Length: 213
Ligand code: SF4
Ligand code: SF4
Image (cartoon, rainbow, N blue to C red; front, side, top):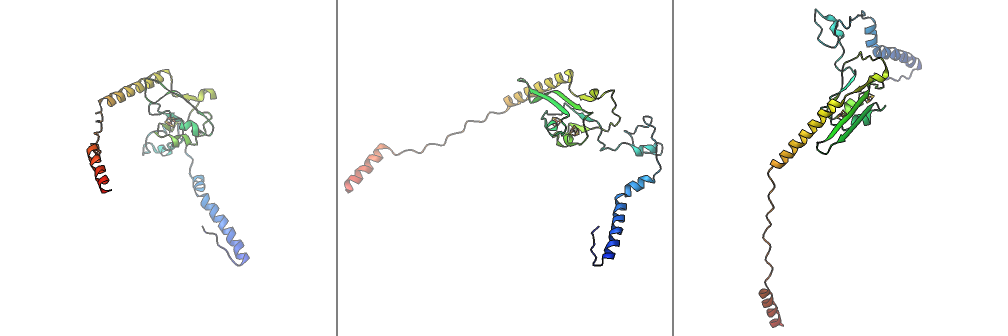
């Protein structure tokens, strides 16, 4: 709404009041609508509000958790490249990563990937920055643990680490085999060198010059 200016101060005064009331009502449209909507109690967990679509049998599923809800973070460590961008961008440093290269493997290998879910403020920066979309928000909203210490989610345990090492070694072997099988580039053929003037040609030229003198 463009703000109008009046020459008459009384007109301006009443216009300002009108503008303040209308813009407030526009801003509160959704709040007012929700205020007059009948409250609904979903019998969770009997009604699974994470799955399914609303239907005549399950009308309460219209209150299901939104698809873009920012719940608990999850990292698919088999997709993750251990680049560390998520940990770098996190404003409160609640992602902890340890990654190493092993001589016989390919790429970085995750030894630790922890997220302190108790500290996370669900800003979404880490999810935005992840280049391979391995780090995502789940729709899990009822994340309850007995203490905040137990809210550190560890995505790489010993077993997972072993699997990651195995995958990296296999990748390295495949890459080496591919390199060995690739046709070797042929040595470049040198163009024939321009013949230099022979000594006899040079001698005859010198003789001609002497005779002219
Ligand atoms: S959502 Fe924000 S606060 Fe939570 S881990 Fe990601 S970057 Fe950090
Ligand atoms: S940004 Fe994505 S790929 Fe990089 S370390 Fe984080 S989760 Fe892994």
